[in-house]
Length: 289
Image (spheres, helix red, strand yellow):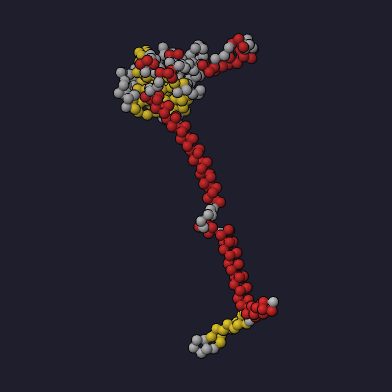
């Protein structure tokens, strides 16, 4: 015990023993600065300096942009931006896939490249078939008055086709002689209507121009997109009166009869109708007489 007590006193003496740190002028040995230090003072001061340096470094990393240069740390703004870019990328991929399918449909319309098994649905009326027995079709006074007003308005409307015949759904694009009809077996998904050069060609319904360009095979081509996923195609035109993106109304002039393209056989209109990406017989919906 005495030996341990003596050792503790020796350690305490060494820790508390005073030393003098003197800074002298090298030339004159004049004393400039002096400090009285002990080993305990040096240890405590060094520890406090180390702790302060660690705390300062931690604060610097946590609250300044310098943390972005430390491996394992990243900016919150960069994370948020990366997340937003991920969502935008997913949206762009979806839009790109939709656009590619849309372009494939337009390409099929231009080429007439359709499988025979896709011709089963040849009617734009199929989704609207109803059983008349389920409804009371007796006219009422208000309905008769409204019908009379609408009929009077349509009589003087240059852009809407009169509904005198319920079987005629679309406006006639061109009056003339049909020289070749709709023949899926021969991959002729259209009707050819002969008319004089420069005869106006009209839109069969309200819609928007989705294609209006020159093609080597079919000359000047214009394609209209209508409601209910209906598309009308006009080929071998002599000139086009509308551009891509234009909005047209039924009966509005969109092109003129011509004799353009490698596959033309004379001045005529090659007219196609497509419903939900499938060709349908135009003679079922348009009267060319």
